[in-house]
Length: 464
Image (cartoon, rainbow, N blue to C red; front, side, top):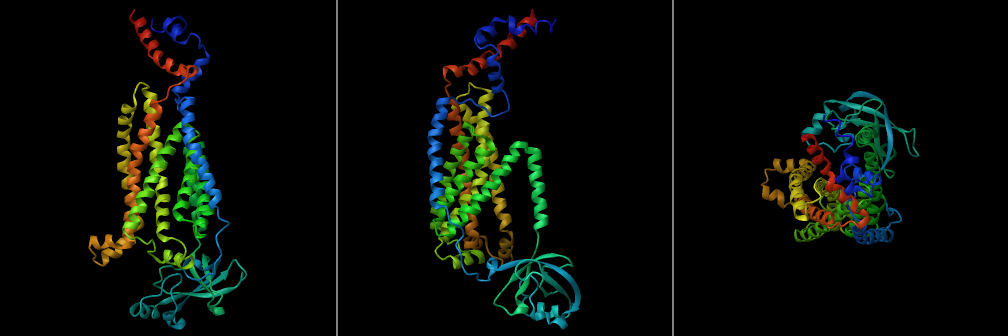
């Protein structure tokens, strides 16, 4: 009884034919697309032209900025031999023997790769212990095959093992016996394996989306290393370079990962507005708080090598680039939420869409802001421990430039993140609701109305 009326429903039900009379089989593919899980396309050609009229000039301006600011490479300088500015080579520990620290005068020799021990008890204790005498063979550079001896104290933070791959520093001006010293362990293999596991996981779970995400990640690092860093070192304004570079990364990553669609374009617009807000707030509060950006040995070395670099501008550039990754996540999620809500109920107006999607955004804000704050706190944990050891008050800790930089970075980024949710949601709701398909494209709307018709008709037939 119930199965016999079902097959002839479409050919016999007049309500179906009145809604699809001139569409025939040609409209069936459009109807299935509107309910599919692929990229939704509820936007008319007119509205796509409006979006393109905004984004194409922006993309052209970013391209012009890349061309104008593109550096010819990292400017050369004389190596200082300090910190990361040292010449390094690859090497390997070929033999290791245990010796009495007194026999090698270990108190006068710094620990391998570490800092010299504190005067007094540390050094005297090392003299009476058992040290390691490592023979290290240079594996790269002009002195490949040459060996030198490295003494490792028992309390050194980094201990060497026989056959271990290491990184050595080269000081050409030092006496021959002191030209090489071990400064680190070679971690390339475990890092490469971990990167391979990450890439494999992304591709297995994300499939083509995951593959495109990895390609976008490579492109982002390419923009960072080939454009942003050399351009700043050449003396270009760090803020302008960061805005141009971050915009290029945003356009490439979002369109490559999510497709060249109106949905992605709205996410791009929301991200752009949020980045502008972050840049404005960061500029105001970095100047107001008198943050120089020169807070540790690394920034001090950069300022010493390139004194023309605006260190506070470099700090602001870091805030903008650091916020971009989280912004992409939030804006894409909010745009997708609005699109899916519109797909589920095409009758919803912009206000209803905004209210429904903003509830999703509030949950996202709560989790992402907490993540952002904890990420910065985790990075600064050793510094916070030092302040805790010194019994400093919270006010004193927050007032120091080292911590104030992280506070401004975190709060400015979080404000931009919070603002991106209502901005992107409003843009997406307006775009989707303002869509008015042309007469040839009105079929999807016509199809949506009778979608419930066959169900009601089927119910009436069953009652009979």
